[in-house]
Amino acid sequence: MSKTDISLVVPLYNESENIEEIYLRIKSELCKLSLKFEIVFVDDGSVDGTSDILKEIKRKEPNIKLVIFDRNYGQTEAMAAGFEYAGGDIIITMDGDLQNDPADILPVIIKLQSGYDLVCGWRKARKDRFLSRRLPSMIANAIISFITKVSIHDLGCSLKGFRRELVENIHLYSDMHRYIPIIASSIGANIAEIPVTHRARAKGDSKYGLSRSWKVIIDLLKIKVLVDFSSRPLALFSWFSLPFLFLGLVFWAQYFLSHHGSQVLTYSFVLQGTGTLYLFLAFSLLAFGFVTQLIIKTGDLKSDKIINSITGNV
Image 1 (cartoon, rainbow, N blue to C red):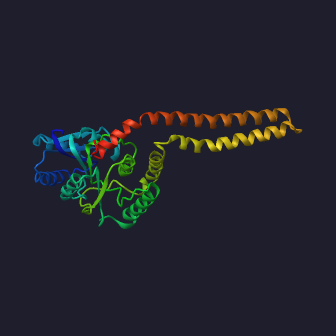
Image 2: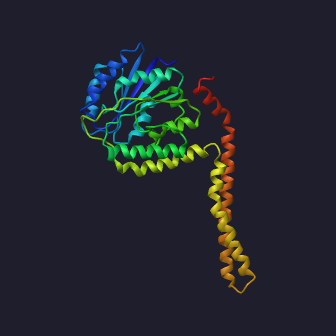
Image 3: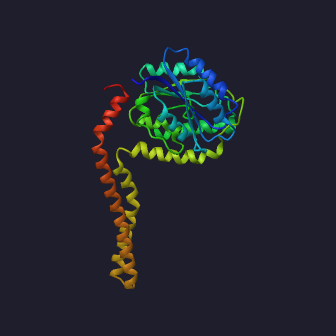
């Protein structure tokens, strides 16, 4: 057991108008628990004085940890940094814009203590604009659930609870913080979802919009490959090799036809060389997939130990 029971990770970007209130409300809720807690604020390169306010709060409060980026890296990197500096056995994440209600921290903790590894908040009565926020989110969640076969209503909700063992085995990059439940499911974590309160933003500006949709789609493709083929890369590379194998056979067939016909020898040589190159690429991909498969099989014992640790069977 670590010295800290609960770590609350709050990524922030230009939230100077909300920081003090969100801190006081979080502290009020955590003080109701007979647990040792800390709050990890991550300033993701704010330019509105957010870091100055955070430093002032830290001077008065010993249970605050600060991570301040020199520029804006994005919410995924901010969350990953918060995970790295968090020392609690249970880690809770939430936005710093007051749209998540700190009163929901306790239900998340209770759900985690009932045996789950990850608890996701579900903004069932979301208070955002329908056309620009809620509708795209509903469509995206439906598509992601259909493709990944992981049924989570609200992947975009930042209010989540994690057991430390799970966080230590999830590595975040790009915009993949929203896909944590998908990654967690792929390594055998027990996941629950609970309805949480959602409020309209009262202060500051929203940091999200439709312009991010293309990146979400790209990251979805990455996650699909990660989930489906991370344990069987030979299947993935076999699919990649098929077009090259087909083209190689086509060029070699043309070579044999031209070699026994009236075509110019140079033309036949080009067909032979191109066909050989394509076949070489196909077999190289298959060989790479085979080697990768062997490496992953070698690590199976370690993976089994990780899954057992997460699910509480060790």
